[in-house]
Length: 292
Image 1 (cartoon, helix red, strand yellow):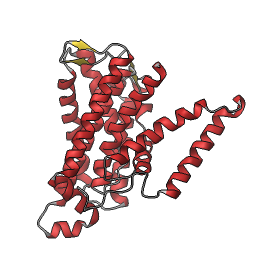
Image 2 (cartoon, rainbow, N blue to C red; image 1 turned 90 degrees about the vertical axis):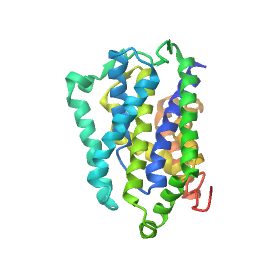
Image 3 (cartoon, rainbow, N blue to C red; image 1 turned 45 degrees about the vertical axis):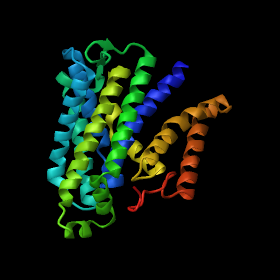
Image 4 (cartoon, one colour; image 1 turned 180 degrees about the vertical axis):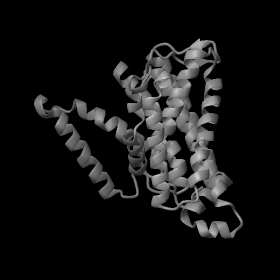
């Protein structure tokens, strides 16, 4: 049961991350390669406040969300008007810069050795989460709150404008709307939510190091989003379940011990190919502009 609870906690963290990525990629048509950078910034900032201050999760979350959101403005102002591959390269550069800082600023981040012994988060500054099951319940609460927020955003005028930008940005600009401003806000919210996922991860494990927040992690998050489907709520949910749960289920398949690891990778890879071949739009499909 502890193993299942652990997987569910990790699943909830990835649900938050993939929902955040959906806001920029699925809603704004901005393909980014720096989700793990904001994830890492949130984890390290959350760790700093958990180690140094006796304050509640809500206070830490507010600080981290603001900090990661403001950090996103740096890349937004520098590259939000870039198109296609140029914007992707700008986000890739940001990802590499953040990883380099985390890996080399040893006095603050611990460098490659990371930071261990991170305290658990406190609810209202009083109740500290101890044990795996309180973390599981709290991760469900945060993941559910994220889903509810995304549901409201998608159904709001802001969400409808974002889907219109994804479909035809020139037409949206022709109506007098500032497409760059909408994209900047989407990037801000996405980064803030990724920062919250970082706090949850750091307080649960409780150990972080730069290898948790690499380009590979960003690609993993994008894979979950595209497998599930973009622009809706169900897609990120199904994508996160697929990339987190399916590999774990394969551990229980009776395979020869000496080749089990390689066979699991092959089976998982084939399942990805089959899903993308049969459902190139994602398991849940793509939300059309007419959906509400």
